[in-house]
Length: 195
Image 1: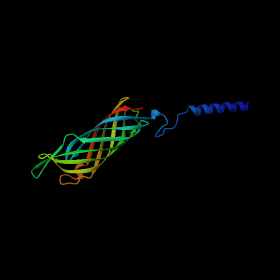
Image 2 (image 1 turned 30 degrees about the vertical axis):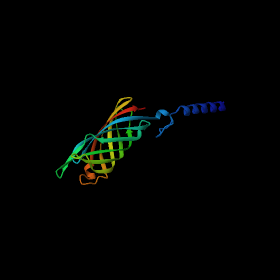
Image 3 (image 1 turned 120 degrees about the vertical axis):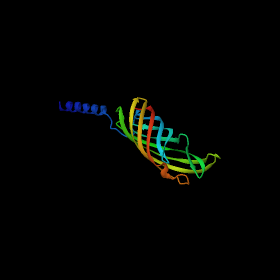
Image 4 (image 1 turned 180 degrees about the vertical axis):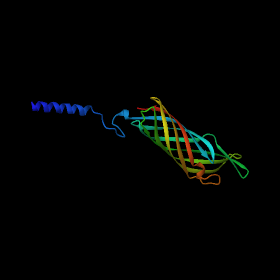
């Protein structure tokens, strides 16, 4: 009788263990734990004291609907104009690189998260009269942000972010790096598979 009871309890325990959920991990063993998305990006920031708009896109691999890693690219919409010593100039600015982030409670309709963009790019100044480059600086950009996000559909999300951009490498007679530093505000439209 004891042997039968022991065998029965062992079978029940093994069945319970087999049916229990696996622990959450950063990268799961099931294919559905890994998904991805593409994004349309809008970023607003001050350049030389005036509000400027950068647009672009990005994409990332999403692990367990929480952590993502990917890439992005942003470029100044239009050109920033300035005058110096009686001459007029126009400036273009763009950067791209790594995009990392973490969603907090992503299954909630409204949730928050953190992200950062680490990128390289350039700032170019041209003479309007001659259309020749008079300066080009290579730049490094670091832009950590907090975001709020809304799950619109299983394949579409919208988020709004605030952060601060630090730019390194601008050093010429027109601008310094501090002219490209400042608070940022962004809107992102995310399209993909959100498991």
